[in-house]
Image (tube, rainbow, N blue to C red; front, side, top):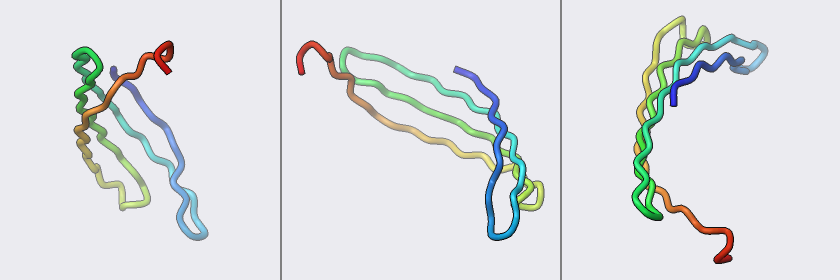
Length: 67
């Protein structure tokens, strides 16, 4: 998955625009999901600095018929 995010960041008495590029890679193995997400964000609330965040996780899928 690839995406672009446009947003507004609220700070006391100010509203700042932000722009981010997002990517996500998932690996589905039976009921397990292994994923990694990357976000590169440009926010004017942090003096127009570029910030990169990486998330890694493990999830579990449930079959709704079994519940």
